[in-house]
Length: 225
Image 1 (spheres, rainbow, N blue to C red):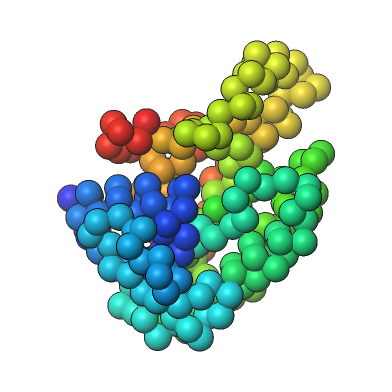
Image 2 (cartoon, rainbow, N blue to C red):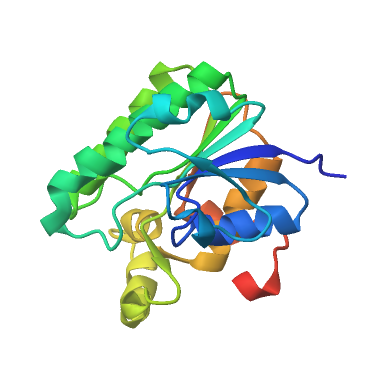
């Protein structure tokens, strides 16, 4: 029997967060999610809203307890090189605030979605995520860090045309490692792995790369696959 977790979630109205929150509620976990005033109605049913801003941990830190798990999913949507500045002012800045909130609340497990790196493109993006990982380590938090590259799902399917090229690259010795590290994962695989991370807290730092995300961890709602 998996014990019920008390989860504090940022990004609960987003692409990953809304689906994760709904699945955690379905699995009988208690979920509180940060929401900007006026956006709380976008949270899935069964999620308790916490009003505040992701860029100021003091606006919500006192409401993180009694959570034992903090999941941070804030990020600029539809990342592209044109948004390099926002990767630091939104992605990195919110992650640093989340780490401070988690430390203040003394949560026992922090879950963070980073990105596969190093990579030949989107340097500003993965540099910002790598700095966020460093902040987690510096805070001495026990954490699970997921490192996907591109997540296929509704509205995010164009890279599927690259699947044949990935297959070839994964079978060539000179490109195998990078092709696997920068491989595509599905939305279902991501939710599956995030749920697994919540239900199986890490001791210390645990890194989950693309091959592990693809392997799957547990059964989730068929609607998410």
